[in-house]
Image (cartoon, rainbow, N blue to C red; front, side):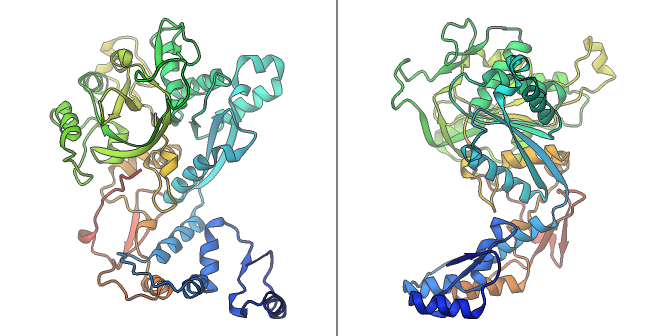
Length: 471
């Protein structure tokens, strides 16, 4: 395989073939491309897959419902059509090496492709947002805050240790009070709880026992099954199931705060029963509609899903009721015991009124997207199956989330076959018989609205609107 910036003349290819003792047709040219996702298509144009199958004498027996190559072509076409740009800031402590957040960067890119948007990412050092930096390095301080304030959304990823935590807390408070879409991951969730406890509940010393073991308000604690001080083998790792859940306190808060809002819809009866039954017999499937006032409940649209974990600390269950009474609610719990808080969401209005009588005439403004997870959804995001958490963030950043949530089809151009040529490409690629049933579908999202999908030559009654819940 020859990496080059321009096509190789046949004379060069013949010479490479001669001196490497490789057949001419097996000299593959890998040209520079504008986007990494175009590479598989360029390699396939030179029959690389067929060459590999022939060389290793493989005869794959694939059973596919739609052409793989056509799906990938749809993805690359989607990137070419995107015009609107969203600016997202990542507030972390390892920003000098972007590869430290490679999974996160890719997950955001997947979501941007899915939503027909271009992505402009900025890595902001959390320490530069702290008050101490204002004194030591004013230029870095003001540049960091300028980047943060000009972003359409903010992500606070995971990490370990106290360095940079104050900067993350400052960024989270900025997002919470200014209505900037926010997604917290792992430590990002823990920081969101600490910030809310300090600035809303008034517990000025609220902290994680990781940072302050003697705090009087340990809102974040070490997992109870582990002995404090012993670090080896004490992380909660791997794929775990999360059940979507809404407590009675959360329902009451919603009904009391947003009683004049159209966001309120009917809840599932007996949420606690759903939680216990899911845990007991695993009887609920993603085909069931999960109605809720939680944004994430609507986006996921299933009673449970699986995600990968990597953490040692978590929310203290003793403080959950007080957090929910003030508007920071838990919308997902673990399926094993039910006392681990996996997803939180902010329901506190952006604008508080002086007294309850004001609510009779005014509807409070709900935060567009303030969500945090204890797990890492970026680990399971894929180009053709983006994590719904990042999709929600990117849509909120582009002010399209509401339209997307209420759209009954929610089609993505990466989920459908584009045309007959794409079917033929995939059949030729794997040299297999065409599947008996292939969806004759053309779907793409307009740049005006991600939730508006234009359909050509299709019977909408035959289209399913299932959502991938294996995040």
